[in-house]
Image 1 (tube, each protein chain N blue to C red):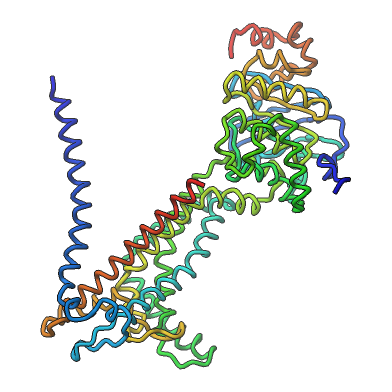
Image 2 (spheres, rainbow over the protein chains, first blue to last red; image 1 turned 60 degrees about the vertical axis):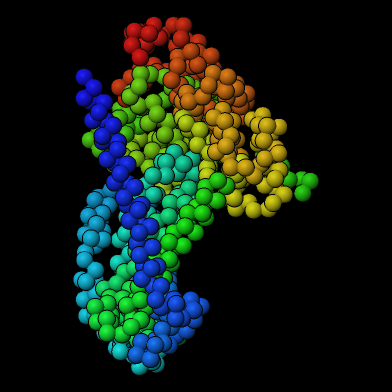
Amino acid sequence: MKYRIIKDKVAGGVMTLFTLLSLILLVAMAVGLWLKSADILEEHSMWNLLTASEWKPMRNQFGFLAFISGTFYVTGVATVIALPTSLLMAIFLTEYSRSTVRRYIYPLLDILASLPSVIFGVWGTLVIVPIVSDIIGPAVGTATSGYTLLSGAVVLSVMILPLLVSLFIEILGNVEIDLREASLALGATRWQTTKHVVLKKGLPGIIASTVLAISRALGETIAVLMVCGNLIIIPDSLLDACYPIPALIANNYGEMLSLPLYESALMFAAFILFFIVLVFNLGARLYLKTIKTE
Amino acid sequence: MAEFNPTQKFEKIEHNGIEVRGLNIHIGDAHILKDVNVTIPKNKITCIIGPSGCGKSTLLRTFNRIIDTTEGVKISGDVLLGDHNIVKSHGSDLIELRRHIGLVPQRPCPLPMSIYDNIAYGCRIHGIRNKEKLNAVVEHYLRSIGLWDEVKDRLSAPAGRLSGGQQQRLCLARSLAVEPSVLLADESTSALDPISSKKVEQLFVDLKRDYTIVMVTHTLQQAQRVADHVIFMYLGEVVEQGPARDVFNNPQNELTKRYLDGAFS
């Protein structure tokens, strides 16, 4: 007779265990990466590693600045492209379009969101890179191979776009219809209603979704690696090549064991990436908390 | 600024009540309103009563065409307010027309902004941005619904922090602030506690001097308390309409009689 009670307890316990495991995994990863980076941190100061841009493993020079800036630039430009585009798309779909339009577009977005990233990489190589080298480069008077920060950012923005659109649709769709009607009933236009009521109500969710998408973009590896040029420089313009941290790790892990500090350096790179994503997420959470209590 | 009158910011519509002729509404394949002909007298409270699903909310929502937010809706017939035909209005005319017809919703729904901005919102979207004018408008309309003393020290607090009854009065003030001629109330007291409900109800009674009020009520008792004019609907058709005293005391139609006796609801 106590059987169902026991089952309830066991289910609760197992679920708690799995949840705790995922948390432990996160901590273990951070600790593991940190321990693995210990070798390089013994020999070089953290400040030097983060602020130097010379990367010559053969000569024991490990400066991460080029990679860090590459990561931020690609992600930043991709966000600047994807954020307004996806927001306008979501507004069109939730506020302006008919349900028949939505019925056809939603599945397409889902497919786009679930395409493997290597396909985006191939698409970028075959379409975006030639456009940048043959059209955009000559248009601004710069000779470029097309393998640039801009190409990486465009590919990345297209990758996070469907994610952003579907999250935004979810958020805007959850804004009560009563609020829209209250605004429309006062004689507001649809755009006024969207801008002052729907977007305002959805703002916390919009920020949270953007953080999620940026976190994904920060770590996106293969598609960006295929089109961004991978030169170890701090990019000066959109038409320079860049070399984000995930590309550094993916390109070099596996062939670095012959050099003493190389593995440790790559682990440190992974740690930096981990740290950036973590700080970014925590910062966004804190910010969300303040605007929600307002 | 002395000459600014917060109640005379916008043009008003000259009208003699609302005249509905041959109104039919389909939503998808469903025939929701069937050849509705009613008259809403000016500066009176008209209550639309009837069992749930009879189309009373749909009729109310046609008066300011907020019904348009429902997908697949088809309207035919005429709804006349002064020189304007509400059914035939489109685009900017319709948006402009909505200002003249206020809506107080069923559940209180303050906009996601401060108490002050909730009242000022309507004026702002219609182009009034002068701070002093807005201050005057906010104070006037908060006073008119008796909320001023309760909130004057926290005008910049989010409106969502007010109690349900206060929120509903705020929504009423928000509607009044754009100077409508007609006020629509869709079971506006049903989500409130009895005391707040009484307060809001009394406000509507006080307001009929200046506004033409159309109410959908969920309780017959409320209609009997406040109505000057009654429309009884059943299954999308208007069964009986007329002065409240006549309809309540001497209903002509058998169906109306049975509904008033509580035979069905």
